[in-house]
Length: 74
Image (tube, rainbow, N blue to C red; front, side):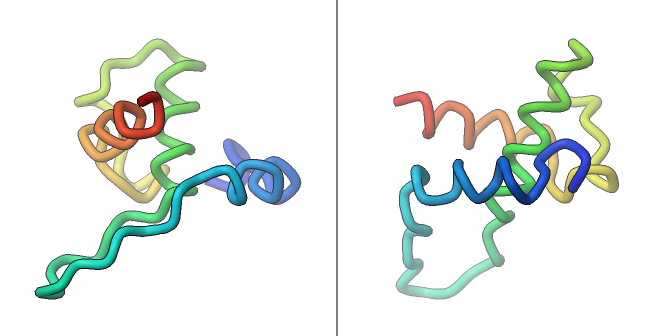
């Protein structure tokens, strides 16, 4: 993941992202924004389908990255 989102790039992008919403009832921990960004970058670089995004390489599923892209683009 660090190769896709190096520390210097993350230092620029992180302040631009909205803060993580609080869940009143707890629930599953949210995937990190950095992992979602790594997934988005990997899909854009390779042209692979979202469903084929390797969770083990980026830290979250393709569906999570895809949904986060939709939220960030609004």
